[in-house]
Amino acid sequence: MKRVFVIMILVLCISTSCKGERKEATKSSEKESLFSDLNGVPVSLEQFKGKRILVNYWATWCVPCLKEFPSLVKAQELLSNENYVFLFPSPDGVKKIKAFNESTSYPLQFLSLNESLDKLNIYALPSTIIYATDGSVHKKIDGATDWSAPEMIELLKDVP
Picture: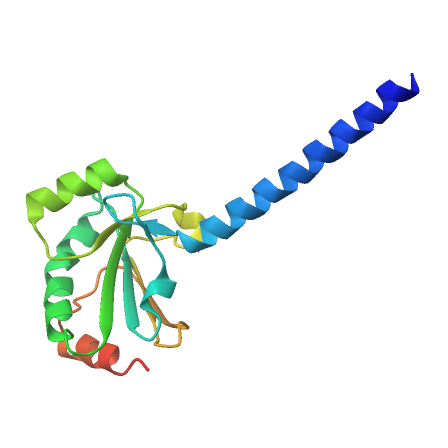
């Protein structure tokens, strides 16, 4: 009887300690891979430390998102010497994003989102977050924007 009790306690302790390690590993990898490229390679904002980052959340079914892409392409061109990285994560999944990319051939870095939009406090599409070189959020803009307009280019150039 004592032997069974001791074995049960040992099994319980071992299974509890294993669960804790798995949870911690998952939390760590989730933070590191908020996005993936279209080949499944994790992409983290930390990779672009020291750069200004424009992250435009979009979806293939979002008409305003699609309408602003030409101005984003133009803004990316205009800011090519301004230490900027433009990223375009979508919750649609790799297959849909690849199909969209093949049909449009925009020269943009499309990514697959590995998290739900609501967990990122994104409640509208398109939604754009602009990060300063120190990694802090400089500005968040919800809704379609003419990114190539002179005032937007100036706003983006003024990001520290």
